[in-house]
Length: 408
Image 1 (cartoon, rainbow, N blue to C red):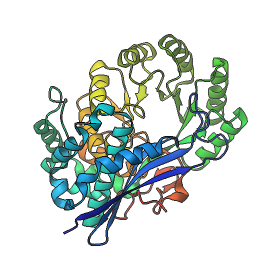
Image 2 (spheres, helix red, strand yellow; image 1 turned 180 degrees about the vertical axis):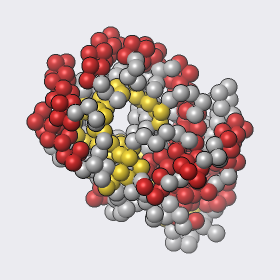
Image 3 (cartoon, one colour; image 1 turned 180 degrees about the horizontal axis):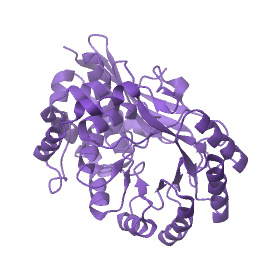
């Protein structure tokens, strides 16, 4: 029996090298986590993280303190057997719910708590998260998820059937565990880097085995964007994929105009072209810049918004993030939901790829999502006990028990 005896929080903030992490809106970020630490009566611990940009991490920790009170005294196997129902109770806290609902500080706190529960559960079973999830029955996976407000597009029974229908071919798809999951280098083209540096970074990334790199766009002078993208395209050639990320800076007319011009450089996607809650604007952009898909996710806070984006045809690349959604549980809901629409799933990694290196294996093996790329950001490697390993441009499958979230 592994019973939670104590819940603690940690406000973890990390400074970045000059220019790293910078984009069109976040000019001087500090990467941070609202951390949930679960202690048990048998000496195990669980670590959950929710991503921040520094300021306000203390608010997330305070919300964790309040929301996590019901965890004390919970036996982990009993808790996870019906975790979707338990998570719903936390999310619907009758007084705190008003501060969301299902978004902002409260939802980030729920993400951290949820991720800590999954980490503890995997450690209690002595397996990495990806194996834990793959070993569960379809019914057990469905019990992890709160399906509230998804009824008209995805019920618990439908989720179970989706998982059952994709059982065939699991062994064939499972080879990804041995060969690893492809990464793409997202640290090549921060907006604070000059043109020479991004060209140098792109060449270095290709030399390290990456087949795809990402550049930030959204400069005040649009010509600067075109010059930077053109310079990298010339440096890496047309055999390498280039992703472009505007980080929400443009209005709808700007996004359409600039997106069409950027299409000349054959980007793999255009990411966050406008305000992240504006579903209809994203649909318009998707229609105008096709066949280049629109990618969104790092600022889409819950499964209901994801339902709207998918129903509207406003997204082609689902960048769901378990440190923005209500943790691994709600991430699974979105990933299963995405199977009902013709979209690709490539997570955003607010966790620096630590948890998502597990989740993409589940996506591909259990849900038959296409094996594409997983974002790779190296800036916080030194702070994790078991940092994600990327060799020759490929994520090496983690073997340590848990979610790879323990911090030094």
